[in-house]
Length: 162
Image (cartoon, rainbow, N blue to C red):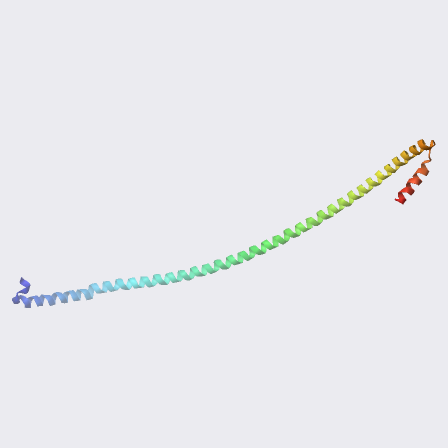
């Protein structure tokens, strides 16, 4: 094996140093700056992405707070509108109920008056019929006619007695 030949040690060491120096200079001047630049770009991009993510998180948080505030205000407004409409409807229903009660009371009073008139008329007709029937009965029993005034007076007294 040529690597183990003692006579070539010195030339092998020379080329080892030259190759090592060449690779060292090449790495230090070309390769390491490119790697360092890539790492720097990567770190800068990561930092920018983190900063953008934090900014977006704050914006999202602000938007969520604004949404919650708007939602809360909307709910309060909706409840106020419902309460107002409920009060309006309740007032309208109360007003209609009172109007209907008044109308029904008027109709009931009118019906009571009509009933009273009908009752008075029926009693008057009944009184006439009873008076006529009593006159006929008394006339047949006694054989003579009873004056109509006397019959009406007797019926009126009987009505007073109960």
